[in-house]
Amino acid sequence: MADPTNAAEVSLPWGSLPAEQFLIRNWDPASSLAPDEQRRTLIRAFLAMENVPTEWCAKANNSNISRVPTESEVQSILAPWRPLSLRKVAAYIWQDRPEGVIILRTYYGNEDEAAAKFEEWLDREMGICGFNYEEDNWWRILDDREYFNLPDDEWHRVFDVVPELVGRSGRPRLPIAEMLAEARDMADYSRSVHPDIIDENYYSSLSQTNILEDLVLDEAQECWLAIANRDSFESEDENKIDRFRLLMLDGHGSIVKESDIWPEEIPVLVNTPERGQFRDSRWWMHGVVGPRYKHDGDIGSVLFAAIRNISSRSPVTGDS
Image (cartoon, rainbow, N blue to C red; front, side, top):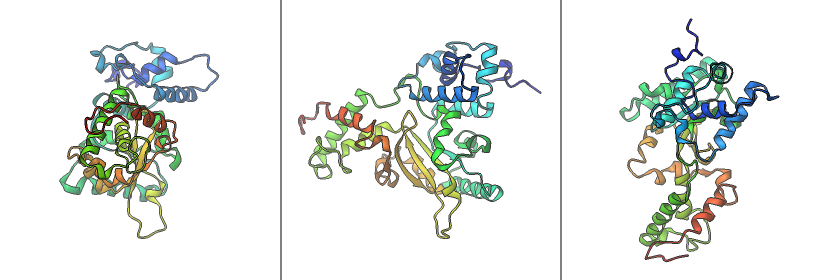
C-alpha cells in the first residue's frame, strides 16, 4: 500500500496551501496541548488572520512553496490532520474559487433512511432546470460521517478540517476602505435615482431598509454554505418542506446573513448574481443578519461606522 504521507504519492506537494504554511510555521513541539487540539487552535488562529500572504499559496506563487515542510513535519503535523480526499477538496476550493453553493451534511442519525433522503435531495437539486452538477459533487458536497457528524450549533467545526472554505490569498477577509467607498458610491447613486426606497435618515441611522447597510453586508459575504442538519432530516410535521440551512459567510467564516433553501432552489440561487438578482432574492431580502453583523455586533458596528465616515462623492446627495 502506498504511504499517504510520502510526498511522491501526493499530487499537491505538502506545504502548498496557506493553512499548511500556518501550521508548520507556528507549531510548538513542546506544547502541552494534544496534537489534535494544537492543530485546531492554530487553524482557528489562521481563520482569524485578516490577510493571508499570497506567497503562502504555491499556485499564486508560481508553484513555489514558501517554506517546504520537513519529513518530520509532514508526518506529525500535516498528514494526520485530514484525509487526502478532503485535502484535495480544500486545495481546489482555495486555489480555483469555483462558483456555487457548498453543501455540508452534519446529521447522520437513522443512517440508511437519512442517506436515501440526502441522495433524493441531491437528485432533485441536479434535476431542476436541466442542471447537472454531478461532476462537481466531489468538491461541493461535504458528506463524511467521521469529520462532519456535528450538532446543529457546531456546524462551524467544518473549518477545523477545511478552513479553505473561506478567505483568499492576498485578499482581506473583510471589506477594506476601497470596497466600502465603492459601496458608498453605489448607495448614493441608488438614493439619487430612487429616493423613496431609502430611509430618510440615510447616513445617521441603519434601518432594515437602508441600502447603505445592505451594500455593506453584500460586500462582506463571500461564501454560501447550505447545511443539511438534524432539522433538515427530522421533523414531526408531516407537511414540513425539505430545506437546508443557508449561511452567507464572510472571509472569516462568520455569518453575514442566514436563510433557508430548498434543494431544487440551489441552481436558481447560483445563477442570481449573473442576473443581478441576488440582493432582490428572498434569501437575501428576508435573511436574518448574523449576530456579529448586527448594528451592535463587533463587525457590523465597525463597518457601518467606517462607511458613514466616507465622504459622499455623489453630486446629487452631497456629504452627510
